[in-house]
Structures are given as C-alpha cells and as structure tokens.
Amino acid sequence: MVKIGNIELPDFPLLLAPMEDVSDPPFRRLCKLHGADLMYSEFISSEGLIRDAIKSRQKLDIFDYERPVGIQIFGGDEEAMALSAKIVETVNPDLIDINFGCPVKKVVCKGAGAGVLKDVDLMVRLTKAVIRSTSLPVTVKTRLGWDENSINIDEVAERLQDIGVQALTVHARTRAQMYKGHSDWSHIERIKNNPRITMPIFGNGDIDSAEKALEYKNKYGLDGMMIGRAAIGYPWIFNEIKHYFETGTHLPKPTIVQRVEAAKNHLQWAMDWKGEKLGILETRRHYTNYFKGLPNFKEHRMKMVSSEDPAFIFETFEEVVQKYEGVELM
Image (cartoon, rainbow, N blue to C red; front, top):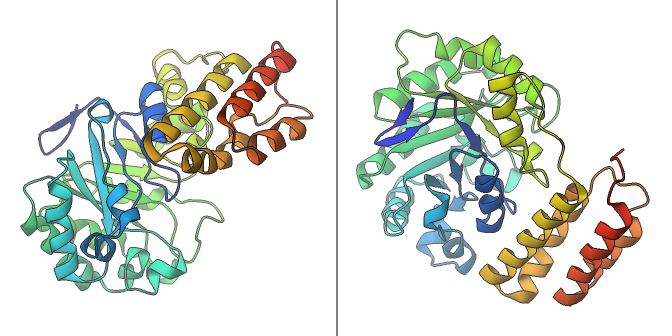
C-alpha cells in the first residue's frame, strides 16, 4: 500500500496527470471509471485564484466520486502561493499538488512551473509557504532539471522531503526537452534508491501501453506511475495496465460501441458541468482520439466538430456505431 498523508492508495497506483485544458471533471470522471487511482485538477494559477478569476475558480470544482483527488497550483510568489493554498483548502480536496514542471513559456516567464528549477532555494520557499498554509498533504510534480547540463532532481527530492513534501512525481524530461525526445527514468530510479528518500516517488513520461508500463515498473522500482497524454481519448489504459500487471494478458480493445459511449458520456458530462455551448466546444478536441484508427472517419468527425446542436452530435455518434460496428481499428 502507498500512503500520502492519510490517503491510502493501492500497491503501485496509476495516477492521472494534471493536463491543461484536458483534466477537467468530465475527463477525470471517465478516467476514474476506467481505473485511475489518483487524479488531479488542471493546474491553477495562484494569482488567478487570488484575483477571483472565473476560469481559475471553476477549476476548483471536484466531486466525491473522484476521490482521492488533488488540486494543483502554480506560481512564483510565496504570499500568493500561501493564500491560494488557503483558498484551495475550502473546497476540501484530498491533497494539494504544486506544479514545478510545466514547460510552457507563458508560465516559465512568470518564474513559475519549470522555471523554478533554475532556483531550488525559491522552490523550497514556495513549497514551505504552501505547507505552512494548509493541513492537507502537499505533493510536488516537477522535471529532471532545466536542461541536460543542470539536472538537479536529486537535490530537489531531498530538500522537498526535508520540508514536509509527502510525495514527488517526476516527469523524466528536462524543461529544455519540452515533450520531445525520450524520457530518462534512470534519474528517477536513482532518487528512489537514495536511502534518505522515504516519500513515495512516481514516474511520468512516455507510458503509452501496458507492456511499457510493466517494463518500467519492473526496471525502475518506483512506487507508481502517472499517465498523461496516453489517456486522452483512451481512458481504458488504466484498467488495461492493471489487467496486464495481474495476468500478463491483454484486455480486449474497446469496441466501437464502447468508444461511442465514452464520447457521449464525455459530451453529456461536459454540458452538465459547463453548460451546453461551452461543453460542446470543449469536447470537440477529444473526438479524434476517441475514434483514432477508424478508416475514412473525417466526414463524421467534421459533423461532430462543426455542429452546436447536441441532438445532431448524438445522432452522429449513432451513425458511427452503425457504420463501424465490427470494423477492426487500423
């Protein structure tokens, strides 16, 4: 059993990564339904929360069926991080996660996300500010370092644990790599094997199949792994990995009926949460992934992404079932 504060997770839990414009409540609900053990909100700007920015506040929405669930915040100012932690605590998540890994320029330029990897002292101060402001467990997600010449994850892990961080997730790339090139989990393995490290260590990066998940589980000896992009449009990956761990065999791939059901649920839950218009708009980006591999699918996808009429979109889903039922995916 893996523990984060009072949160009890199964042996080798599978975590859903916090992904901007992806990891919202409808998407998290699907991933929970298909086996995710711990999930996080999209990352939330500490300054946005303090300004009462509507988009930031809406990201605080969590639901009991998601638990355990964490809310992830980012920022480069100690006072703002401390105050935002107090705001987050009011919605009663199971933990607070701090993002020190986002590589995008608009975040890094504010001295936040992966930008903090250039200044470990600042990282420690920001983290302390959050820990002092909340009674919730505090965890951190970060990267190996700023670039290949400044990999400092060993120092980061020790110093964060020393001030009370209760779990660490490491995306096994540097900021300079963004999402390109190969992840290098050997650095995370080294942290896990450090006799000073007792907090759970989770790996993230490039897990896109049950076979790779088992290979990395056996090879690197971590406490669990976080899955991000591979779950977009394919929430089944969590249960597929768990089944492969237990049996060494593969679950059947989701049928077209199951894919359509997932897409329909995603759309309906998005409309229920954000309203019809915004729910329709924000679900469009997922259809390509739900129906990946279907031959000659463009016509149906265009109908789905060009309509603002939910009845028409649901009718299109049914057309897809009728056309593709029994068709093997490419």
